[in-house]
Image (cartoon, rainbow, N blue to C red; front, side, top):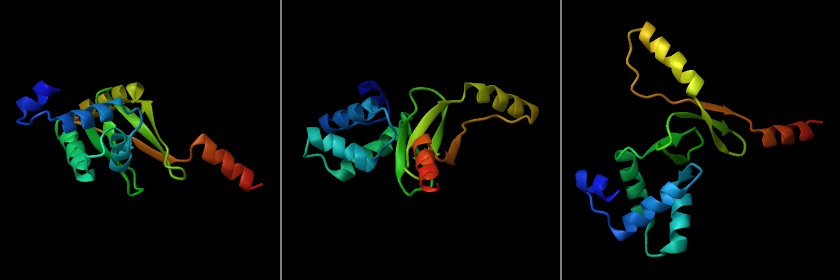
Amino acid sequence: MRELLKNKGFKLTPQRELIFSIFLEQRDHVSVDELYDEIRKLDSSIGYSTVWRNLKLICKLGLAREINVGDGITRYDQVTHGPHGHLFCVKCKKLVEFSVDKIVGFLDQVAEDKNFQIESFKIEIQGLCDDCRALNEKTSV
């Protein structure tokens, strides 16, 4: 981490180190607010704008990307675990990852057929999760 920041002209301050480590420990796609709440439990001196700026830096360094699924909340997704898609529940706002291994081969073939070079892709599917579907079925009876 220190070397990556140094190569890009940034310093690894204690605050930045804490923000980076807490972000990289997250299993879910976090918003700035959620990450800020976690960080404040450990260091109440870190401000919201510091967390926001460092999340932007994490994205700039290629360690994460922003996810916007139309609910007005920007979430941050670690890119350290390879290509994947997202299922987004429009009711409870749950965001779940899924493997795109089978789709990648298809996309590569389409790109080859069209003489196109893929640089990146996003697969985000919106619908209802199992829990919300079950609630809908109970209330519609």
